Image (cartoon, rainbow, N blue to C red; front, side, top):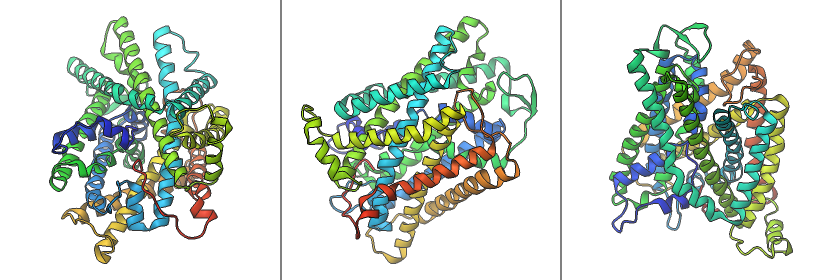
Length: 522
């Protein structure tokens, strides 16, 4: 997943008087989708599939097909933009589901989804940075100490919060000029895995029996269908981002012809990249990207690979953290300006008062204040339980849950668009494949969501409460059992779903509906 904002993507668009070409649209889509998600989430995808290569590959193929159908279905949805609307999920929700739904989703994405991912990504950076320190200086103190990882993440949180509030263009430029680096570790992994397979003639996790990473115990390599379905939410984390292109539909020379081609060819290219990475890991029998150095026989080459990869991952993660922090502050600023958040008048008075009287750039100060408040809240709600339990699995679980929420919103909008096909209340440019792609998306996401909610986090924990989960990033701390992970899942699911209602002015404290002013970033 790549974390970017529409106004930041605009700066990266090629300047063409005649409009955006299909080729440039494909490049924009690939750049928006391909990010750090696969590096942090593919380990849990392998674990969920019991390290079966075919199951892991199936998870990616199914997920990419579903997201491609979802993106194609949204071509008709985006045509509902009225004159003056810039597009975005909140306006589409308002068009097809009503004004209150638009406000709920606007607050959900701006106040909850963006800030939550911005917060969790800082811990992702801490783990990547710890691995770099470990590989470079042969010192495992940081990677084995959750308290120190927490400290690094908090330092980054404070830094990015201040930069996003007072120097927002700094983070924008970082994302624009350094983002290309994220493709380097992708290429490195693909080359390492394929070369290793050719040299050793090893079929890796496609074999009848497998050895998981450095464990010398062999395991039967069996296909795990429930595990394949449960692995889809982490994969969706790495595939989100198609709305970056759909929001730019008006910039194409011929949107009706170009958008379908852009989405299909773009996702085929994304599929090729992600599948090659997964196949490379499968052949080398390494669900951990840092273990890909087994390709090299000389110890110094293995060390060089580890240092290089961990450095690249650290830089790429920092870029994603910077851009996501900026996205959060800008989104919160918009919500505050439209008075869609509680205490918006009080916050506006605060930033216009003596506290910030010496600050020259007040462009996003309201968003900055809300960002500080929500980061403190998330610190109490996520980092402290993680610290007490000595695990990074809560952070991993929370990011998966937030992504599920976002795709539930997408599906709800598609349901509204299908209803609109019969009522014709909203004017749209109908596409011939809308019914098929919408039904596939709705059915697929409904099955995956219900399976994840009720089998993965209810039935399985009851039947096997002490079983191991597939959650976790790089930190080797305590592992949660199924029951603990399920309890955490339901707590955070309820909190995330309720937060937009609790913090929205118009959903709780005022009667009637607020005029939804479109946030181009949502």
